[in-house]
Structures are given as structure tokens and as C-alpha cells.
Length: 483
Image 1: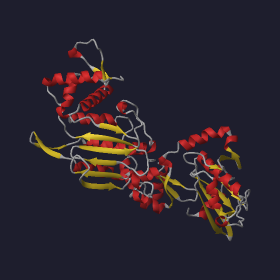
Image 2 (image 1 turned 135 degrees about the horizontal axis):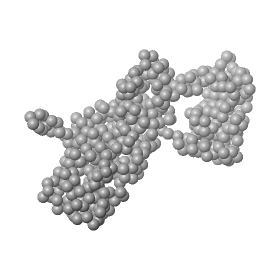
Image 3 (image 1 turned 180 degrees about the vertical axis):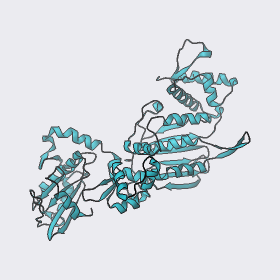
């Protein structure tokens, strides 16, 4: 951490010791330090702080600088260095670092402790907590255990820091903040950078650190980074687009990675994909019209979903768009939070709520749960096969298909298209009919028999059910099986 002297000054200005700051003079008892690391890490999580601190060389009551005798890095437990000994005694999620520096000719020791993540930090398999200025076993304070575990379990990816110890100039170099104001439209960009910093902090894009410098949050980096490669933990979350020559992965034609934050590159990404997909020009009433093989609105919605709903804790993987000669596959890390058979009607869920909220503010997505309605309807409008949704242990993949004739579809593909047609009809307060399905597949009335057989199979397979089983066949209407 930079600005250690500024950090110590800021902490000394606190009215008293807190649950996440402890001052020492010359007490370097190893067991005490181990217990306090556990307690401070857990207390920082409970207080919503990114870090906790132990400072040596500060008077406990007056917060005056009095100096300390020892150097943290030189201390040993037997023949073992103190730091190595502590790491062997603490749980593996304990993260801390020692620093020494001189201030006003006094040695100051600083132990910076990261907040507990995923689970409590323990020392010798016991977890501790700070109550006021006292370190206690967590098991002795039942009232604190529930709130602490809630804080630890509910720590969001967006809230964690992608980069620390940056000044205002660094913020301007690393983030394309102008795109935030351009997309927001309702808020003009302030004339001063201090005004910009104010809004970025309000959006949790950056955060003020205890040492007076700033941290860029994962939310800020993943949305507004000029280049995600600067952020070591996020560079694999850049969107990759791969184009293949045929229907398989044998011959790759293009491999492009969009390293900017999602708000920075989104429109460029969509235009890039649009330029790669097959297109023909039709003349309609003497007017030349572009006819793209896939509905751009479906591509846009599917990619937005992949960005927003990905599991950022799945390491080594990011959003992937693969373009084949007959389909587009869009894959994101993480399984679906919604049963794929209820993806049309269920309320929206997001594992990255702050990301979804910010991208909605910027007009790049919506949180109404109607994205999948638009994807399905746009495919139906072009009489394309229904989009396919697949979930794996660590991934979700959506496939958009180019034009395939009704006879070229497998029975499973026909049934899935019939089911999604029933779902979008239902949420529009309508029902499936033989005619509506014929129109969906672009078939004439002479194919009514084929559609009747498809409907019968969909009922047998429990995809759909009749509204009234006793209605005459020509008046039969159908709704999803769950309706």
C-alpha cells in the first residue's frame, strides 16, 4: 500500500480504536498478533471495510506517535520468521502484509489485514472477533455470528477491488469515465474532475481508501476500463469473438478479444458481430433492404445476458461468442439461476445486481425480465429455429440458428420451438393455435396436419396442454404445461 504515512495520520485522527483498527506500542507477542489478525479480518467484514490495521508505535489512548523498537520483518518465533509462522497458524484465507517506515524519526510498524472472504479467518482453528477494543472468541458472542456470516456470504464480486492505491490521475488513465456520462445522457459531465470523482464514488465505480488514495472496484473496471489487461484478475473477463469457416471448430477465420470495459466496447462488439454474420440484400418495392441471417436484437440481448449473468468467480473463463456458418453460440461462465424451461415467465434474477443496475442505467440492458421474450419473438418473426439454451457445470450456452426449413428440424427442435411459442403467447395473454404455429414456422394451411401432429406430440411430452380438452378440434387452444 502506498501513502503509509498518510494512512497512519488518517487512522490516528479516528476518535478511538475501532473494531478494525488497533494501536500498539511494543507488544509483539506472536499469539496475540495471530488472534488479532483473525479478529480484525472478521471485524472488517462485519463493518463493511475492505481492510483492517494494526499499527505499532502509536499511543493507545492519545494516538500520539511514540515509535516502536522492533521491525516486523525481523521478528522470529524460534528459528522461524514471524510472518511464516503466522501463515502456518492462520486459515488459508488470511491475507495480510507487514510494513515498516519512519515518521518524525520514529519507527512505525503497519500490519494491513484484508477482510475475511468466503469464510471467517481463524487462528489455530479458532475464529475471533473484536468487540470494542477487545479480542474475543467468536463462539462467545452468539449475537455477532449471524450478521458476520451474512456479510461474508453476501460479499459481491462488484464490491471487491480490482486496483488499489490509485490517485485521481490514475483513475482518469484507467477508466473511460466519459462514456459513463455519454451513455447516461441525463447527467452532463462535470467541468472539474473532482465532480467526476464524486459521481464515480456514488456509483461504487471507485472507492476512497483509508490512506486518502482511491481503489477501482471490480464493477468500475468491468464496465469502464480502457483496457482490462491492466487489471490482473479481470483480463480473462474480456469478451472474445471467434469466427469459424464452417459448422465445426476446425478452421478459424478470426479471433478478436475486446479488452475494454463492457460499456466501452458494447456497441463496437455488436457492430463487429453484425459485420461477420451472413447478409443478403433484398429489393422490397424498389427499396434495397439488408436481410441479416440473425435478428440483431436477439444477438444484442443474448450477449447482454451473458455479460450480466456470468459467474465472475469462475476463474480463467469469460464471455465467448463463436460464429459458425449456420449458428452463433454465446457462452458465459456460470450456470443459469433460472430453470431454462421457465426463462420466459419467471421474474429476473441476477448474481451481479450492481452490474445489471449500472448497465441498465447506461441503456445497455433492462431488468424487467423481458429480454428473453424479445429474443424468442425476434427469432419467430424471422421464422428461425428457436434459440437453444444449454447449462453445464460451469457454463451456460445459448445458440442462435440461421434459417432451417421445418422439415430440416429434428422433433426435439420442433417441440422446443412449440414450447417457447406457447410461453411467449402466454405472457402476452394469448394461446397457441394450429394457425399461430403455422405462422411461426412459415407454413401454409396445407401443412395444418403436420402442425396438428406436432401439437399432439407436444401435449404427450408435457410441453403444452389444451385450455379446454373438450373443445372441438378446430377451436383448440394451448398453453404451457405449467400455466
